[in-house]
Length: 88
Image (cartoon, rainbow, N blue to C red; front, side, top):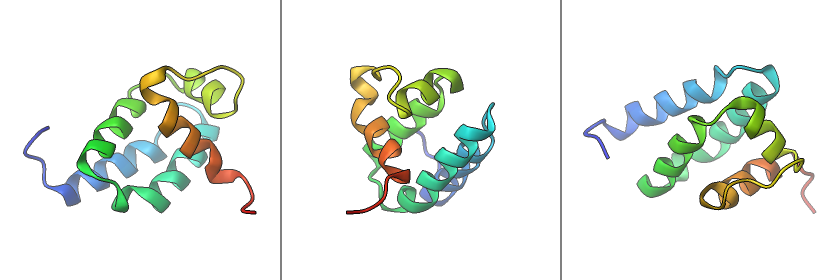
């Protein structure tokens, strides 16, 4: 973990969520970030930061259920994919 202030980290992660390689991931990740980043622990932010380093095409296949996500990202990918599911 770096000495980056939490406020700066949240802004950086949110910006990286909005500026992806493909528009679909811009929409998916920026919506997820807007709803959840502020409430995440530092450890959860570390995992999210790792997720943002993944290739957009892979992320899209994982989030849409076309392929299984790697084990270390599976819980977070599941949470991201539930962002657009209607609440019951």
